[in-house]
Each structure stands twice: as structure tokens, then as C-alpha cells.
Image (cartoon, rainbow, N blue to C red):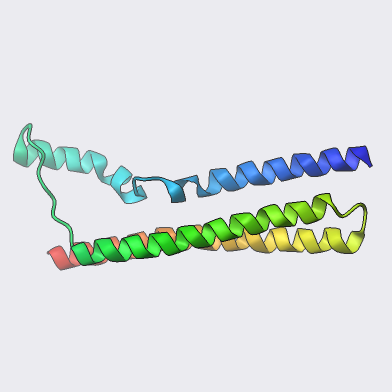
Length: 138
């Protein structure tokens, strides 16, 4: 029983750290596109502004849409993370009952798939809204 408990603890730790590694970009203060475009922005600043920073004006409506969607997806991600902790708790307290272990395994699989969908939705939303913003600016 102690070996199984240690194995379950190890799996839970791997799941939690794997989850945190997976969603850490989702909670970053700087978007993926800001990080990707930093070198290009520096080149534009050097070409057009010399040492001064060139101000790139964005659409305030798209900024608001970004904020709302990011807030909703972050909130959903937090709910899924809490559900993942609950599934781990069910697994740890199963005491060898196969039905409860299978229930928690199924729940864990579904939660991980949901988290992957949330992260992909956030990335895709930023990509689409950024492209719309660039199309409007031109």
C-alpha cells in the first residue's frame, strides 16, 4: 500500500508540475506575440526613430476584447486546475477501490484535454485578434 501511495504522490507531482509548465505562458504578463515581435520592434525603432521609441498605436476596442477573453480563459483555466486537484484527491483517497481510481483517472484525462484546449484557444484568439488589428490599421 505504501508503494502505491508513493507512486500516486509521484504521479500527482508530475501532473501538477506538468500542468504548471504547460499553462505558465497563459499567465504571463507579456503576450506571446509581444515576445516574438520585440526584435522587429527594436529594428523599426532604430530605422525610424533612432534612439527614440516609435509609438505604435493599437485599437482600444481590440485591447478590451483581448482583456475580456484573456480573463475568461484564465478563470476557466483556474477552474480546471482546481478540478485537477480534486481528481488527485479522489485518487489519493481511493484506498484501493478500482471504481474510484478509474473515475479519477478518467477525470484527470478529461481535465488535461480541457486545459490543452483552453491554452490553444487563448493562443488562437490572440493570433486572430492581432491579425484583425493589423488589417484594420492598414
